[in-house]
Length: 168
Image 1 (cartoon, rainbow, N blue to C red):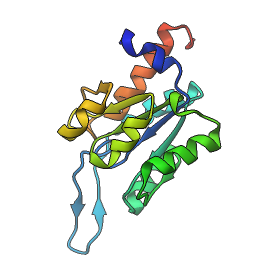
Image 2 (image 1 turned 45 degrees about the vertical axis):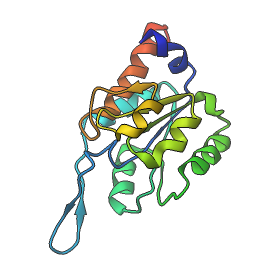
Image 3 (image 1 turned 30 degrees about the horizontal axis):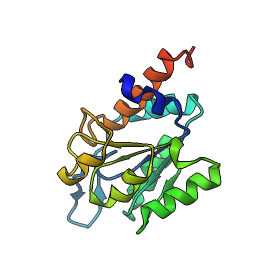
């Protein structure tokens, strides 16, 4: 944890992929074509901790599915969907916030997250991330996507900031 403390202390923005990070990367499809996903309920409290620290949060997803925006809205997290070039969207969003990529963590799980993981100061992947992106990660979470990975990184940031005296 000490190795990452300085980078965690500098965070101003945490960017999350959605499918495979907030979800277990499974999709349920009913006979009428309605899609459902499974998310970890505890993520909301973790995200609230990040917000209380003044850290911005955003979901950037290549997926275009109403369930993504519904979940993000319920969590109070901005969501940008249908992104063919996640890195370009990430850079634009960070610039609009006045945040440098050296102050950004990206949490991903698959090959379409590669450019973002390579470009931020703190690249993070879930435990069940695609093997070929594991070497890009500075932190490999213990939890799988949809099984508490979002909460794990949020709690990690909270605990580092608490150790540094930034949390009351």
